[in-house]
Image (cartoon, rainbow, N blue to C red):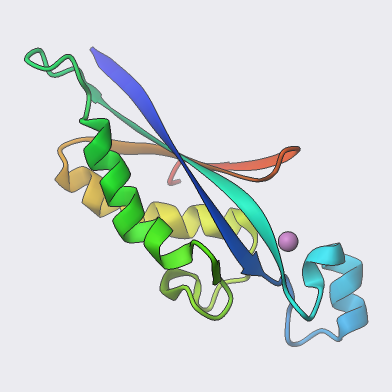
Length: 138
Ligand code: NI
């Protein structure tokens, strides 16, 4: 009986969407206010969904505290109140879009989640209340 469980975590981070091979006008045209040269922040919500069988002894797919601890260790402690362009190791060399962030977080969590004996299923990130990205690792 495969069941899905999701943990939500929140973080605040600064970023800038830009390409250094484009001038500021072109960056503004493509990326809008997220290209502001002096940075800006968002309050992100991260939803990590894992799947696995229900353990008959506990009734749990996973102890959610363990999953939360893992997300804090691998992601939140590195990105919360940081500049993801300059300070976050797993975002180096990536354009700091929500899409790329979702892929990077998947890559950070896939193996550690697997080490807990369950499978990572989905990463969902909201950047504003109107926009969110989902990544299923494919
Ligand atoms: Ni932005």
